[in-house]
Length: 226
Image (cartoon, rainbow, N blue to C red; front, side, top):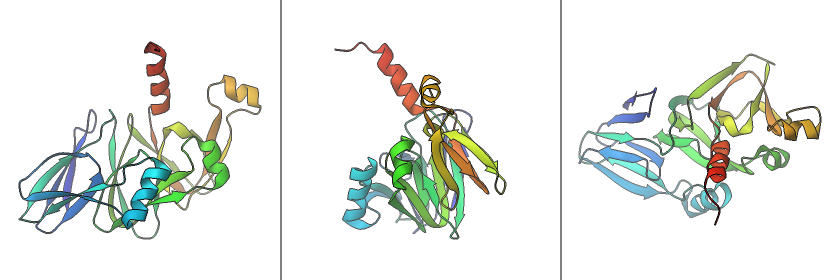
């Protein structure tokens, strides 16, 4: 499948060229425009139980959009609702990609998406909930963000500390743990950081340059309460 990420520095969209019989799955309501040869259907990875897990456990929609070129080759444009970046990640089947719950946008044929349980202590303190998405298989995944997506490439045993609200995706083989941003609880809380994620390489962690939780808090602060 041929594709191009258009307007990457502003409000990006993905333009996919599908040959007859090819398909791509995307988050619900991701499609912007498509050729008349393309059909769009609602599908659930993993059947009803998989869809319910996505809805109840991670807060995601039960359904993906499946865009299928049934009547001939065609073009699909899709994007996401937040003002932020889109990045393509190639998987060769040797590892999976862990994606925070709002980071998945679309995937080509051959990629399976599951809702997985984090380590209890990680989920309890991460602010991302107990559940994340895990993508496995061979193909291309498109992840989206609030703000620009920035890759942090860690060498073997190299460590980096990341605010969990800025996480987008990381290889599922990477080791990470949750810890206080400062040495003491008072300093951690008053600094505005609280708990952070310490990643250890090798691997590439994708982060977003803006924090949707912080933006939500700012909106609440300027909207008059009833």
